[in-house]
Image (cartoon, rainbow, N blue to C red; front, side, top):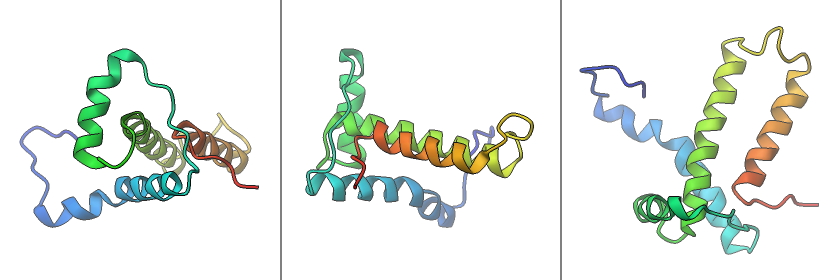
Amino acid sequence: GSPVPGYSAPQDTIVPAARVGLLLIETARSAHAGEGVAPPPLPEGLRPEAARLAADVAPDLPPALAVALVAAWSQLFGLVSFEVFGHFHNVVEDRETFFATAARRLGQDVGLLPRG
């Protein structure tokens, strides 16, 4: 949610708000189990953070993948928000191709290999 001072999200909204992140983790988990994930390289300075993230959200996945998933999650929300609220207007003319390309790159960033 948005960082509004003094605001605390109602408990019944927390699980629904996590759905997209959990779906990304499940997608990566399935691909990793089927040998379809090549974890992205991880800078040395991010290794402690990556280990913490992996332990918190996906202990069965490589730590580098946990960092890539959090980045992809935030970038996906940014893409969707820009599209929904018209921020690509007068910036990107072929939004469908742009969005498809950006989404594919996010998949590559988390190590998902293109099929076919």
